[in-house]
Image (cartoon, rainbow, N blue to C red):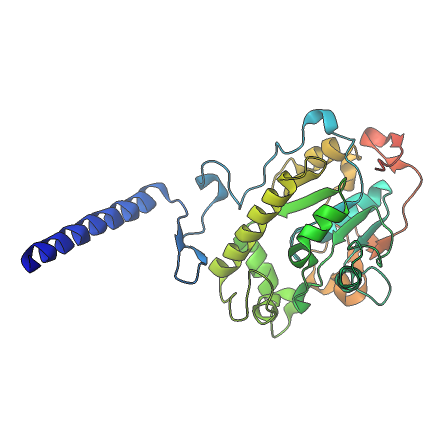
Length: 310
């Protein structure tokens, strides 16, 4: 009987070994990412390759079909960015500010970050933005390296508190995002090191040692946002591929804003708004942390229109 059990165990080990070999061969042949659930329930991205390698829906690639074309130019405010720091927040702020929206970035008053006023609002049982500056666009609601991420901790409160909100979710190459965090302000410690010690949901203390662990965190956040927003038909989720060559055209179409308003900003790490309250565009123009806005929006091809209010 014991001999039969040993033979059975050997047989199972052989089968497992064959399966592992097949998986390895498939990775080599197809250069795909694979995800392995570890004993701590974290997903390790073993191979972070080109986004196009992944077939089907991916937490690393923006979907372009989340907004039906009949809603283009009709999405209601507030526009709330649920993406992370160093993922195009300044570009989003500049885009809507250029068009004439009331937009805020990182700060929700001269002395208070948006993350802080959101925390205060939620702790008092109020909608997340109650104590924050009134704006049409909240382009960055976390406080970056300090580790307060309302888009994670209070995601349900945002979804429930603003049933007609339009949520934004920008996507960027994990490699470029990680390097951007490492080179944050060219300081001795990068943003990645600060976040590793911040104890954020999905990124406990000590996690965030490499690009794989940050990719895991991002993937978890994307899937959670998609799931929660999908449960509420009144919400809109605009996913933004920051590396799409035709992004300016798409943003112009979706939001009915003049295409010339889109441009990459904050390329110089020394000009980040959480340091000196302004961003610099590629044309050399400056835009403060808060844009007052205008009565009429600069629509496509220079046309003028009113803001879509709920």
